[in-house]
Image 1 (cartoon, helix red, strand yellow):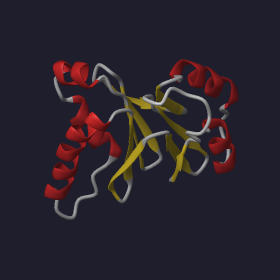
Image 2: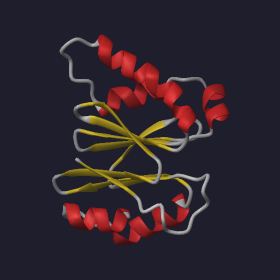
Image 3: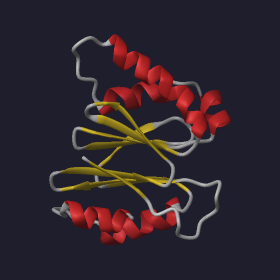
Length: 150
C-alpha cells in the first residue's frame, strides 16, 4: 500500500479536504490533502474532518481489544458505518478505508460501500471521480495510479 499527501499548495479552499483511494495491479494507494490515519499494519483511513477522530478512537480501541487478530478493512468499514445517521449528519464527513487490496468508502450518510476501482470524497470529488473514470484501467501500475490520483 502506498500513502501520499495530495499537493495542498495547489489552489483549493483552505478549509477543505480531498481524499482518494485508487486500486492498481498489486495493491492500493490512498491520498489526502489533510489526514491519513493508520489503524493497524494493514488498515489505513483517509478522512475529511478532524471531528472524524471521534469515530477513529472507537475503531482504534476495537482493534486493541482484538488480541492477535488481524482486523480487516471491511470490518472497520462495517463498524464505522454502524454509527447512527445523526452522528454522520453532525460530522458531515467522508471516509475512505484501505487495506488488503480493498477500498471501502463511507459516505456522508454512513453507508459503507466496497469500491472496485477507486473511491473519492471531499472537495472536488465529482471532478476527481469523472477524471478517474476516464483514466483508470485494469492492470495499471503503482506509478500510474499515483499519477491519476494526485
